[in-house]
Image (cartoon, rainbow, N blue to C red; front, top):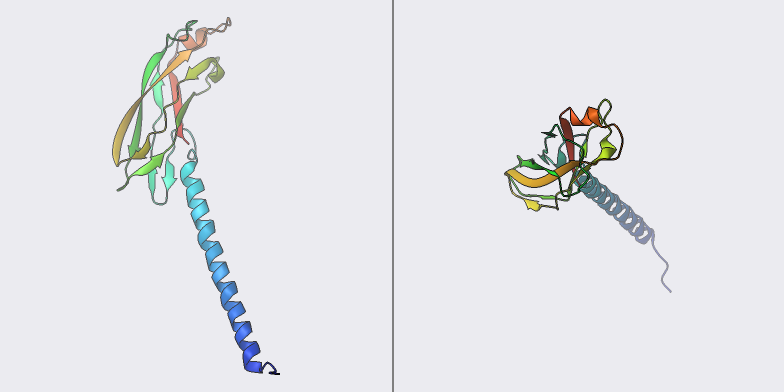
Amino acid sequence: MAVPTPIGRNRRHLIGRRGRAAAATLAVLVTGAVAAYAEFSGSGPGPGGPVAAGSAAIAIPSSTVGPLTPQINPADTTPITVTVDNPGPGALTVGEITGQVRQSSGCQSAWFTVASVAAPGSLAPGQHTYASSVILNDNDRDQKACASQKQTIDWAAH
């Protein structure tokens, strides 16, 4: 019967360290990949902010529309053009684009409905435009403050 030699024990110990080192390296790589995906798939750092993918980013500037008057018929929307800029050298995948009217003095963002833009998918470098719309929903409240001012719509990609 063979008795393990000290060399055999050292070899097993060495393989264990290599295995742990490989596992640690793999964990760092997976964590980096997950963080990069999470950063890209988010909506950016705030209104009209960029959606980042590594060193590339898309930008969706805020839109201004109005003044709007309250509407009862949901078909009476005001068209808006959404501009998406991919300044990077390669295509980026972009999800659904949603907009929200900024809250302003005497005018609540919840009174508005902004149509989302279907996910553009792969977005080549350059500027791209998409159609959307907004409506100030008549809710039987005093909405004169909304009807007399321009509204800013902030966009986010998901």
